Image 1 (cartoon, rainbow, N blue to C red):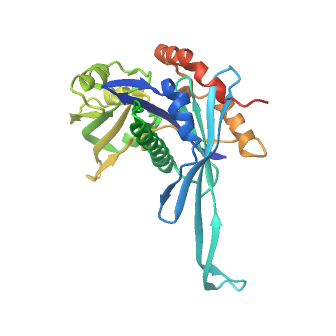
Image 2: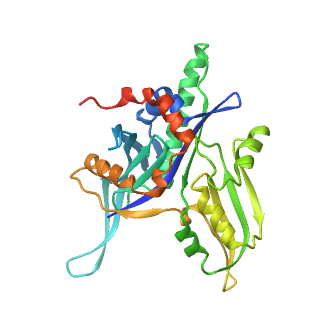
Length: 314
């Protein structure tokens, strides 16, 4: 069983105040960047993507898959000997735990699957992909500027968990007061605001004043059921943060990751490639993965031809 997170992979390109979806630059920015081999270093660890590939789901949808690898050194400073006594050691072992990811290109929902204990987590994935795409675009734009050519647009990446009602209810069960609910919004890649409540704020107002991101803060909301409805129906199109007071008077925060869908996935296969194929099938049964807006479908059909050249020839 492998810990799996269900997420919204939201990448938008920003140029001359216009926002373009992920697939518009799939062949010129996204896939080349994801396959570039760019490495993010943090301390003694190196993070990079491997085996980035395009697969087909059973229904014919194109899906991007790959591995996030964390190459580091494991230090062993102590151990238990054969007599059960604690002994000091000073040993170092190279290690490269990995996680798997699947991005469904029709609606950019994704699965992030941690392969083992010590595998890189979703925060590492967010930081690494953002670093890779930004560095790729910056390098290309430096080259294009020298050549006097038009530069590539600026990528704006947000990877957000998809809240589900059962986890929101569980997180709020001991809460006596929501002091503040913050809803952070960002450019959407063909998504719609499921609740219908934030569309004007998250899109029209944000664009009118020239903001790439924004937030609204609701003070002391009294209708808890209404709060649960709004957050669960947003389905990853906003990031929610609760400031709460518990029954024992403790104050705390409930972040979006804590109320988002994750599960244990049993995968069949003898290697990551086979496990990814199995996970693609299982993902199609998850409600957070399967919803596709009309805009999602239109964008996908208009740009599907840019994906096809990257499929494996077998």
